Length: 347
Image (cartoon, rainbow, N blue to C red; front, side, top):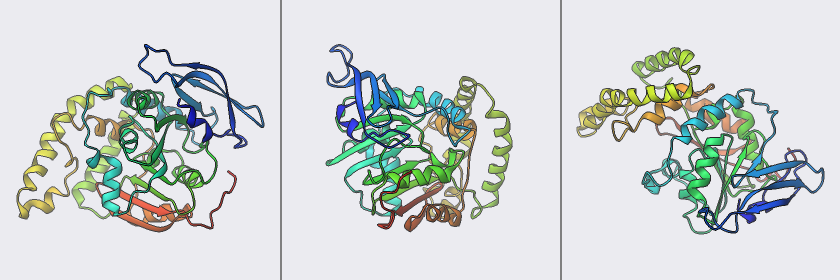
């Protein structure tokens, strides 16, 4: 944990500031920054509530949660993120998740303090930290996600990782200049609570951006049929051991790539076939094993909500957001602005 993160963290019960106690700094041979806090306690200055810092990550959550599916969801995605190896992949920041949202919705990306709500394996977190004038805090509930995100960003002074529940964030109201969540809200047991909490911690006038699964109600019968089949399969796959499902997805990825991605690639070369290729699932694959994570995500998550264009806009409007925009991009990219009337309310 970088020491400057402390000024942003708040007690979950009373939203008061925290004191750092019993600090253990990184050792010279650990590969971490010497000034980083690896172990310690965070104690509320008002109610004496206590949270731990372990492995360089503040553990800002309590066992009770309005999301009853939280433990299963965290374990499922934690396993997926634990398969990622920092430095083993080379990502193009211009083509990764957040940048895709910004291009699809055509908005200027603000600087300042940024919330990555559900940072997963930390790639977006690391990319955002490369921008000038930005401090970015990634929040994830999974142990695997926090570990890999911390390992990926520990050398970046302006990137932070916090283990926390999106439905109960450890930040004061009106903290962030920008908040985004890619593919996370639709896996919460209560997505509306997650979006309301993300909205609470955003500043007035701040953009809030998310990617949501679509329900294919506006698409062709093939996609609706494939979704129905996948939902039937999920009744079994969500109960499989994580290691088994992950390896099944590794076996399935080349098959899915051949059946769907290659025809889509071919179709994009010919104008007459472009409408067909644009409606094929998994058209975004880049190689035989590039779809492992997508397949695992699809078949492992205990909860999965899907939205139409209208319901995704209503979802954001229901959180009090204004100027809501929706763009189609293998699902829905949705953005809303927190109005100035939503001032620093308590949780």
